[in-house]
Length: 282
Image (cartoon, rainbow, N blue to C red; front, side, top):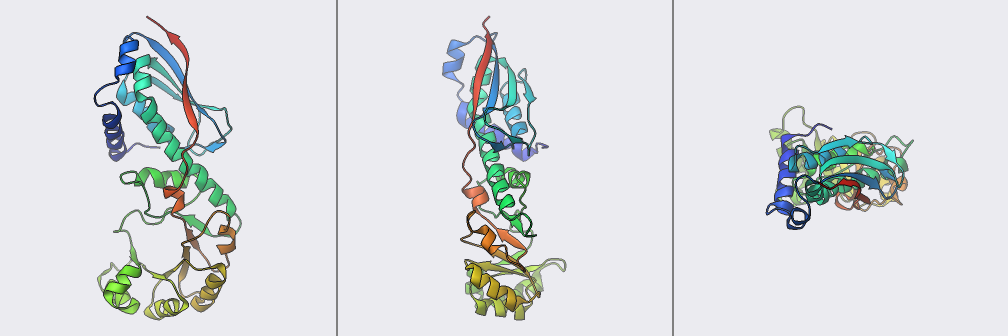
């Protein structure tokens, strides 16, 4: 995982937040010459993601810290597995501990949840994608974690393609009017996606020439009916109210994409911990 300037800036912000005034406890107990080895262990079965970010956290606290990744992004690890080893000044290791764990726990949690969703639709040909419901500033990292878990990304920003939602339609006056205005202004390669909540809106979106129709908060039966109405005239995306327990019910013939905001906004943090394994007091 290459670390972008945005990611290193995010690391710096996190370290400033947690250790901007120093680490009073660690510096009081340990001299700069006191060295330790620490291991980050998985406490549950996980799909790993973000170890390189955690390693960078340690490096930015103290460049003398040596890190060794014991797993790679996308690896399925068992509870008890060691995933990262760090060697260096004890005080620096402990200063970096929480920030490093915050990154790797968050990203691994997303990758692990994404893997479960991907597995749930395996064999259907349907792609599970994320949304823009991400932690502010973390979008690139969280969308990377989604891919690491085997799912896919929806648009990463408002500028990537046209998606006409309910508030656009309400303010424009009609779905058809919103499509016409976007068609006139959008680049010639841009697809027009329209959110539809009812079969009447699905029909209107088809007549207006939408290339993608997002079926919002429909039941599986309503999705099946909408697919029949669309009849291949547009790519079909399903979103809203889909859970891990029900996603297979929505992965119907004619559905191409299911978007799940929960991949990022509701992923539980992975259970990982850092423990000192050896120390060399000086």
